[in-house]
Length: 47
Image (cartoon, rainbow, N blue to C red; front, side):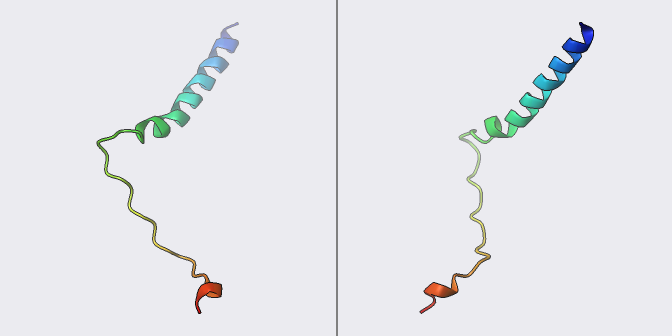
């Protein structure tokens, strides 16, 4: 039974660690991220 609790604890820690960046990004006091630099150029619309 203790093995089940260990596996369950590891799963809970993994889910919480994955959710932390999602929860942290909703902070209204943070500055918005900088816009990404355009890396691809669409040569089809270059006329």
